[in-house]
Image (tube, rainbow, N blue to C red):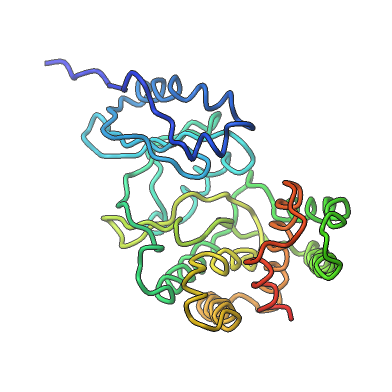
Length: 306
């Protein structure tokens, strides 16, 4: 008996979050998603078996392969952040990261193993969750970046170049001085920006439960650089847990110290690159019209640099 042909719903309902995030800058990509889903379902001989899900920048579709294995089809815009994702995931130890089953480099489309619908954000104890993240960071950043991964040196250099035009848009003179201080710290680090394979976005939502391992890392935005650049995401995620301690400043510093304790990352370099991550976010938000530093960023800066 011939195998049944792959199936795809007649209409793919695009999640609202994806429309909000890409409605203006990637309208053509959004419009092409139903056709792209049909193309890859046919190419990789898949059957759709669930409703579309959404990350911040991608459409995730539950599918089943011809061999019966459950998987997730991930479609995303092709850009500097997504183009190295499959390469990075295949470079790290497979016991640490989601497995890539198929990929199309030209579009950054991936077929990934299916994981459990739980993340480290669901782990009740945020300190335990942070320790697990730190252990992942230690292992991932021990791996040299392969050729072809974009460099932190270039990303950080662009921050330094953009800063003079954006810092004057901040309305508070004290905040302008602080951000200029961060620019100077990044400039000091630029000549030795590192060569490790970085995830760039290693936070609680990007570590998911799995069957073959308790947890696996997903969704890298890979860079070749210094592991100190990776400490920042835990400092402003699970924010309510930090606030709930009753001593926000101390809680932020405790998280920072735990990351360094587990990973062995040099404290001064971690501080310098955390200043760079705050700078990066301030520049992004200012370019989008903000005139003050976001409260969470200001709190992290206060905890670590005052």
